[in-house]
Length: 314
Image (cartoon, rainbow, N blue to C red; front, side, top):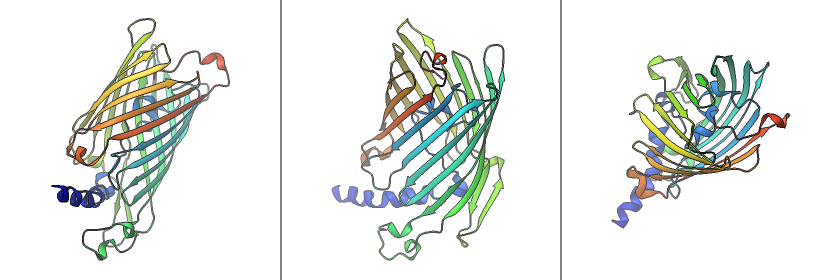
């Protein structure tokens, strides 16, 4: 049994690469547990929704203890402009999976309509991903395999995303398509990339959340996200967070077929917030890893401090 586990641990990174390296067909999207505290990371229509210049750093170490497991780092910054009628922002992502490296930079824009009870926003994201695979760093079971003898060239994969987001003081809902283009990398001509608009290959997200006042010191925030990836079953991520005295967040979550999560957050000041999430793997991979850790640090730049009197909930 011990020898079997050692062999599996050796071939799992290669299996992850073979599964995820189909970027052109699977349109792989990084996983986030604390998406509900930084919706712009999954929906460009959220751009400017915090009503101030807002930035967030995120670090995610997935499936710790497993060689080649995903590590994701993101930075987002966005702000409303033109008297809150529009929003602009920037999203940067660095994603490492086995020997695969993806670094993307995207510009966000949102047009915002003020309605009777809330705001409706339409967002667009445009940018590119720098993608390459350091295949020479792999240690395949079969030594000197020519398919893994050299790294692939760096490729620039352009893309765009679209989203719609509606929110009030108590409720929000959104729909987004993170990647409108299908980036196809030729298997025989490694430097040749084909970019096509393929509706049937679109992945999409639906998010929703609600804020309920339990008492003067306790608020509950249930939230849910439906994620559909072409060629894979739909994933449902359901969460329940409690806010204590507008300072401390505590929560639990469940992602179908993948993990159970616990959350903790702290509103350090009116402008700065910190969050931590731990995912306990429930899939077959639980034997090979020690769970997932995710850290977030956010800061809202208040040029008129009177406008930020309590933490933002959406």
